[in-house]
Image (tube, rainbow, N blue to C red; front, side):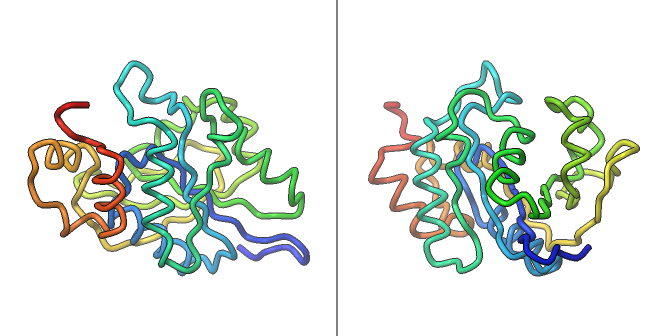
Length: 200
């Protein structure tokens, strides 16, 4: 994969990030370095359609945590493109918006192997597969899986970090230490905003 003469190679790593943790950050850095991306956007979902009906921390709080986590991580950018657009967060809309700004850009969407096989359930997936290359990364406990036929993809090996946001929310609620997997800046953000506390 090579970039175009005028366009940038942009990585799009979308997620709820509820909360963002070191596993997310290390994955983003590994993909950026492996694929020589010009930009790596961690795109905070406004309304994650995959989690409809589930409790989700307000989008602005999740964005604040991502911005805090990446403040000292050169080459990683917190993106609020989906917050500013509003409504449900669909990857195809984000990719189209990025391409409107830079029509010559090459967009690489990062997905875990645990969801790669189900990409044909994504909103407007046929249009999406024409616009992007996928970077498929393995996740701890999930067997390797390829996307359905028709997707252009590369598999990117990353060091597995066995931590989940679900587990972290439980640990934070219980008042257990999380400094082994949450950046200090995120812990400060959680404390200042009163996130994941029992009274919420």
